[in-house]
Amino acid sequence: MWRFFHSTSQGRRHIREGIPCQDKTAARVGSDNSYVIALADGAGSARLSHIGAQIACDTIVSLLLNTFDSCWNASDSGPIKDKMITSIVSKLTDAANEEGNQVSDYASTLLAVAIKDEKYIAVHIGDGVIGCIKNQESKVVSSPTNGEFSNVTVFITSDNVKETIKLLKGKTDEIAMFILFSDGAQQCLYNKAKNELAPAIESIYKNSFLYSNSDFQKELEITLTEVIGENTTDDCSIALIIHSDPSQISYAEMTSAEKYQLFGISSKNPNKDKRLAQLEKLVSYLQTSHTSKEIADYYHMKLKYAKKKIKYLENKGLISLINNKYKATILI
Amino acid sequence: MCALFSKDELINNPTARIPVCLCLDTSGSMFGDPILELNNGVKLFFNSIKEDEVALYSAEIAIITFGAKGVVCERDFSGIFGNINAPLFIANGNTPMGEAVNLALDKLTERKQAYKDCGVDYYQPWLVLMTDGQPNGIPQELERSVQRTVELVNSRKLTVFPIGIGRNADLNTLSRYSPNRTPLRLKGLCFKEFFAWLSKSVSAVSQSLPGEHINIDFDGIKGWAEL
Image (cartoon, chains in turn red, brown):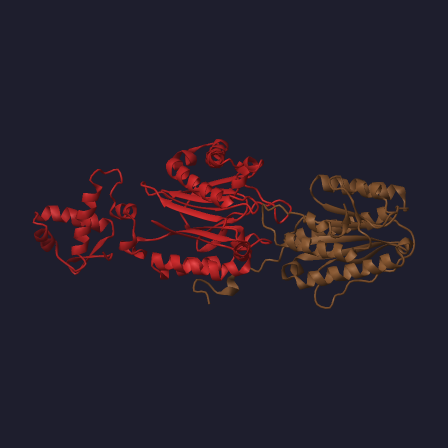
């Protein structure tokens, strides 16, 4: 199970000059328990790049959720890269044509990570950094693409985007977190000379478990604006996706997809909601300890059927047997 | 106070640098008011950079002169901090402009390599070339300097500002250094106005973000150039 968090912060220079925040983020959970986080940084002098950045994020999120398997299984990454670029440029072109603008007005970078069934795909165009926590240590997954000069990078609309787009895939076995951040945040979160992430990244990961989802999201927003943002006049943005045990997540904060996954209910099951409700009811009853006989009586069913349900939940790790009584291991 | 990490866990990356080389004619014909105003202009440039908190940590200024002692590197690329003052120039001697530009380009190459070795980002370098006459150094050196400069400009690795001083400035030779930008003639002795414009332009570059076009302040140029 994964949790994601993302935030953007308008740079001091943009506030001063009345330019909107050109960094945008997006994140979604798919119905098949796939996850995508995305981040895009609009080009400085492209007047509608804040719109372009959002279009880029939303397009890559949909594309990766809908075609994760075909992207992963492709033996040649070339056509996949082309498809990604073409899809986004097509959406940007539609937006441009609607308003009579140039596609280049919507230029932005793009970073994204998609996860499904212990596999990941990462996409990177331009600057900014994709990192991860693997075996408890932070590592760079994809470093920034810059030209020789500091104010030069590649955008989705650049002529050389096909030569420079990076597409990576791997297993999430030992990976506990992915992080994306734009070049504004890169100033203090990435050591350019050594191509390493700041120690702060590991601390962010470790401290994430001390908060509820909503509190961590708030803390991330404050940190981005008041700490990370102080190191640059540029916009900053950050997106995280963190691997979590169910015991680390409040049940109330789980999405439906996460609840189905927790109870081992297939998203394709036509009766998934009814099944979920039944199992939730049992786990809720077992917030206090009961014997299998008491469980059977509670459900007005024969003991052998009650034992089947108990066995199912025990195998999922959601209840455990202590002193001949069963008790839930999660709080509902 | 940050709850998610300690501030000493952040990285302090060096500021991106903008290397600016002033390549200045201090030959005998600059004697009198021209050299006086040039000195005042460079001093103003230094002071303006020092007063700009962004440009201060970004700008690295080198000064190469060509005059009495031949070609002199008055200062190599470095920042302008604290008590560092602008050098004072004396007008005398010939005009080995080609040799001066070659030295400027050599210094620039060295500096860019130093940046790369230390992982320091940098913006496209600038070469400001100012002369009031015709070059009279070694012709082959002049040709070599033109060729090198044009190659860098055409491959977008260098921005050149060729400025002619006074009626006798050879704008034809200056134009050979700058395939993309017509050389300008300084209006009278408006060195101060030029260097004020230059420091503002440097400041604009040092605050620029990826994908941002650096808009040269053409209106501002009218303040110091004959257009």
